[in-house]
Length: 347
Image 1: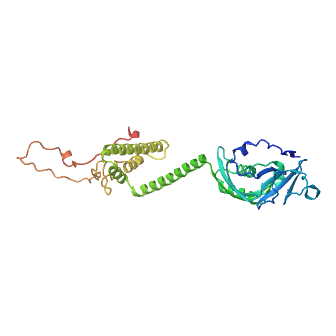
Image 2: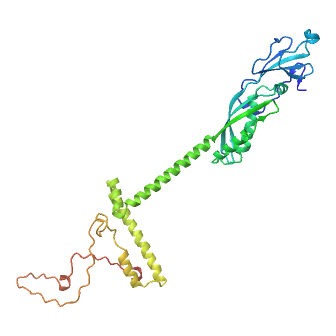
C-alpha cells in the first residue's frame, strides 16, 4: 500500500525540475487524527479522505459513524482535507530548439484542479503545481526541439494544439482543463536577431543612398562639386584622386588595345584614331557643357589641316625691325595645345 498505519508515506525526493519550480499552495491542506477531528462535513471546494489502520483510503462526503450504531471508535485513523478548487498557474521555462545554442522561452498558463482526492492522498502529493509544470514543459520540450529559432510562430501554434487537444488527467489525481501558450526567443537569440534586423535596415538605407547618389551625380563635375561642398580644404586631395583615377582608366584602355593589336584584331592606325577619341583630360569639372581640363581651362580643339594655298610674299618695310619671325612660325597659332604622345607600339 502507499501509506502505513501512521498515514501516507514520506514524499519521495523530487527531481531538479520540480525543485526549481516555485512552491504553490499545497493540495493536501491538513492531516488530522480522526479521534480529534471535528465531526463536520467538508466545505465547498474541499474533499475529506479517510484512511484506516491498513492504509486503505476512502473519499467520504460526511464524517464516518462509530461502531455499534454510532458509539465507539471508527475504523479510520486519519482524515485528510484536500483542496479541489480550480487553480490557475503560469509556468515559464527555456526549452531547446533545433538551432544550435538557441532556445525558446515558453510561457504556459494552465488551469487545473484535483479531480481524484484519493489518489492525491495515496501519492502524498504536496504540490500539484509542480506536477503540472513538469508534465506540460515535457510536452513543450518535445515540440520545441523540432523547430528552428526563427520558426517561433509555427512552434507556438503546434504546442498550443498539443496542449489543447484534450483534458490531461494525470495518474496522481490532477487534471489540466485548459492551457494558454506563448513563446519567444531567448535573450541571446533575440539580441542576435535585432543585430541582423539593424544590419538589414542599414544595408537597405545604404542601397537607397547609393541609388540617390547615382541619380544626382551624372559626371565628374557633379562628383567633384559634391565633395568640394562637404570639405573645401580637400581640394588638393580631390584633384589628385581624380587625376589618379583618370590615369588608371587610360592605362586600362591602352592595355586593352595592346592586346587587340597583339591578337591582330585591330591595326595600329585604327588604335591611334580610337585612342585619340577615347583618351583625354578629365572633362567638365567646372564647365559641364564644354571640354575642360582638371583645372577648368578650356580644351582647345586640334586645328584642322589647312588646304595648301599660295601665300603672297610679305611686304618688307624698311622701317621694320630686323627681328623677323621665320615664315614657318608666322602662320602657326600660338595657343595650340599639342596632346600627341607616342604609343607603345609606335616606338
